[in-house]
Length: 357
Image 1 (cartoon, rainbow, N blue to C red):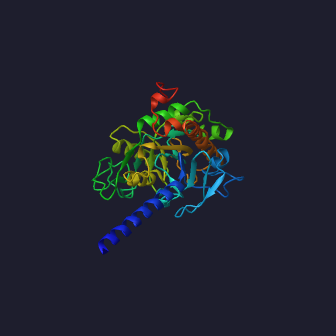
Image 2: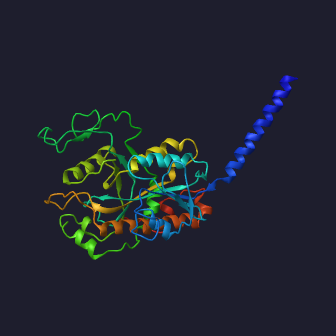
Image 3: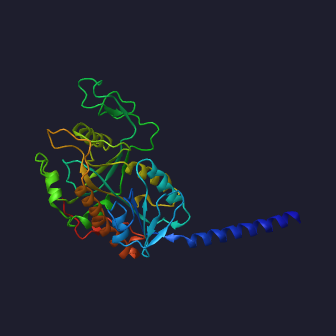
């Protein structure tokens, strides 16, 4: 009799638990697109914009919601767009993980767009330009030797863990990955959709470009391209470091990648997304990284780098470009959600497929 009673109680408990889980699932906000920005300047609206404000005002994102573990209040819209401020550098990992682990949202079909500013290699593009990444390369697991102490035949004092010299792959032990490959079809689709977006130019941007006479791409008015991202929590600048970044991206992508943008967060974001992909909470294939140039990664050829590399014109242009370009993709996804909820778009889905930059 006791055994029968126990089985009845257990069955009721399981049924109650399943009902509670179903109710909790039903209460979760279904999200179509997550926009990850890394910082804001001042208020979310009405003042000098950071990465977050153009999305809040331009979409608009009218609802606020606090997410435990994310310091900045998040915003979302009735059509399923959620944007967060992850904070910069190492804090980004914690914020993205907190979002994924939150019971407030259903992210299982959400597309992710990392929308942030970056230093741009003048060999690849100009300030104000927007690059869709095919690869994100991690540059945090690294050995460093002061250039004044390095061997005379080394190009710089940065090299891979457990390697004996620069430009040789080490073991990278303790790292979950060194390079993340984004879904090529999705990246090409996003690029094809946005490649002809007109990005504003200004006298200030033209003045920033003028000294880069030896870099044709760096002298172009702002444009949209495909170009890869290097992530490292330390901020760096200069000709020697830019050469290292170009080499590092080539090294870890086996020559397939092209260093274009340098930032402090992409490696952390991709690492966390990969860690949670197997749980079914997110779909790792639905991830895009869009970085916009706020400053050049080095001074013009033959000139000495200065410690202050940011200019207001570059910042404004990069904030604006991120929303102008990223917004096109988000609007397409939300407007045709009946298709994209179950079908990840590819280059063939783009009306401008088949054309090269």
